[in-house]
Amino acid sequence: MDFTKMHGAGNDFIMLNNISESLNLPVELITALCARHFGIGADGLIILKPSSKYNFRMVYYNSDGSRAGMCGNGARCAARFAVDQGIAPRKLKFESDSGIVEAEVAGEWVEISMGEVRELRLNIDVDSFRVSYAVAGVPHAVLFSGDDKSPDQSDFLNAARKIRHHKSFEPDGTNVNLAVIRDQGSLSYRTYERGVEAETMACGTGAVAVSVIAAHLGMVKSPVDCRAAGGDTLRVSFIKKSYGAAKACLKGPAVETYSGSVDVQGIVRR
Image 1 (cartoon, rainbow, N blue to C red):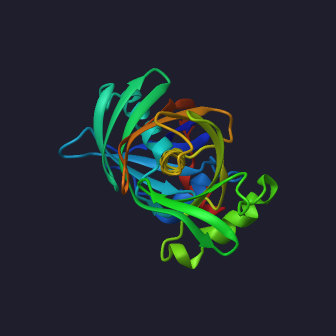
Image 2: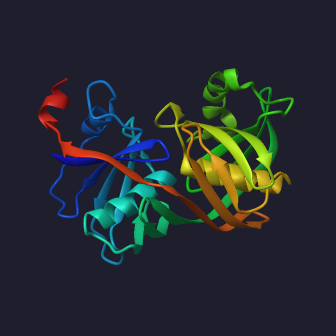
């Protein structure tokens, strides 16, 4: 099976062109392909399928095989991949499980529409932590470093694992972010992603959720430059609303690292 490996600010994905609908991808194959030591290795797997109304449909799977409604960096990589594969022009629209995504590809830089950020909840107590919450395609809990109820950087992953499954976010759980505000237009952040069950080098929906929540807390104003754990910066813009935000956009690098073919039967047998 032919594949392309891409990353968006260090958030890495296996990209598959299934416009011909010739591929069969059971969950066990997806998890095997994403396994870092025995497969290709990735935070997630993205399939491009045909769409009757738009340039294509993006289907996103986490590395554990679970399907997610949206992935910001994955969507940016999908847009660039579609352009490179001749599936779409540089200004395009495609379907995702969370709605229609508009995108523009300019070299390695890709900007996508993220639509609305909703279900905003500020300063809720989750065990011993002060957490804010919003849905930016997928759910995100956000803590801010320097808060007296925020974990230290070194304790973040232990705290994130507790918050990720907390009853406050049942039944689906949540992604968890720890952010440091730099100034009114910039911040840095880390993300523990559900479905990967580990920290990733970047999270596009996380950058959007963190930025919108920080704006509602009076910490930043749109646009916001978000420095991810991998060192790259994503730019988030939005219009603040009482429920969260409207017209959220995410811009940053989407890079092809390599392409090749994989022995599917050999990977699954392991």
